[in-house]
Length: 221
Image 1: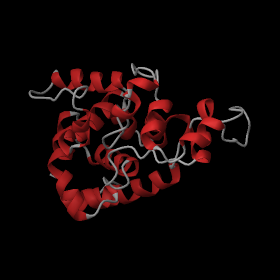
Image 2: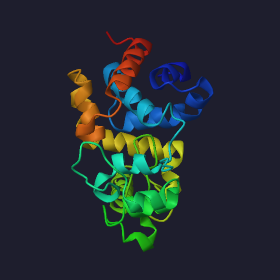
Image 3: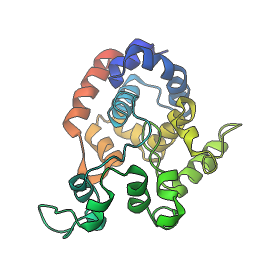
């Protein structure tokens, strides 16, 4: 069984925070067959990067206008195809207004309603691998209920996904459904990053550095 110290080293979390997540992560890794040191090191490194060492399990949407143009150019840039993204009027209007940003950025995506529904904010990213949009919250609920009793209705209480128990299980579910165990077995860590982050491969170097620490902590050669 992994220790809090190993999880701290593998995720970049303080030991006290790793202790809070120890039981939840241990259970999730068991439930989704993340059982070998190689799989565990890759999993913990990825969720550590995604959650800034298990400290950020609710999406931070406090973007400035330029951040909005860079992140969602289709909605917030004057010319989405331009190499240098220039914020449009909407980006300037919504800058540093997280709730409004979420409602605009995620409107009409993944089962979310329009801006006025508030679904973008309600179903913003939560958990160590951020679960986002109504459809994904509903799917995680339904899939976990096939495995476990007493799974909350994440659609009704989306904040439950920020709780270690349910957040860890949602991360494990995502990991399993995207074939990340097989990639970890082959040492294809960048492919796991792509499965989690898409073609942008954001933070790839930082993820690899954390993976090296995770492998050392778990005794993976």
